[in-house]
Amino acid sequence: MAWGIFIFFIGSLWIVAELTRLDMGSYFALGVGLILIGLNLARRSIGTKISKFSLGLGVLALLVGLGALGGLKLPLVPTIVVIIGIFIVAEAIAKKESG
Image (cartoon, rainbow, N blue to C red; front, top):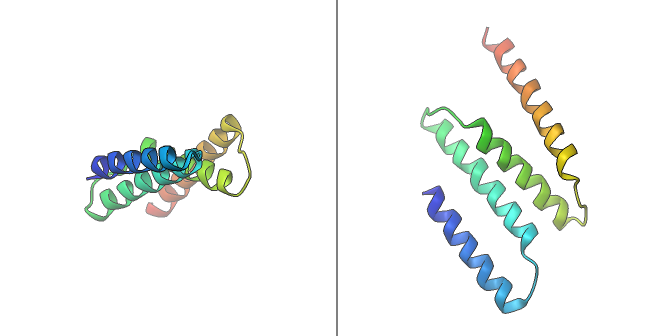
């Protein structure tokens, strides 16, 4: 289902970009981030293990998209380093709480 939403989303943005001649890059990043995060929330809700890779990409895309819409251009490599750090800390906290 996520793939279908993703393909639909790409096509829709492409059409809007062609009709309006606007750059849709920030909306693309935002949408991809929401789709990937939603995919992992759906996995968790049915008891399937989440993918840290796709969740990380989703968070990165979401931050880049929100930053671009807000007029802030986030530097890619430092943003990736921050996200990796957040995931390491979150995993350590989750392991500590689970015993």
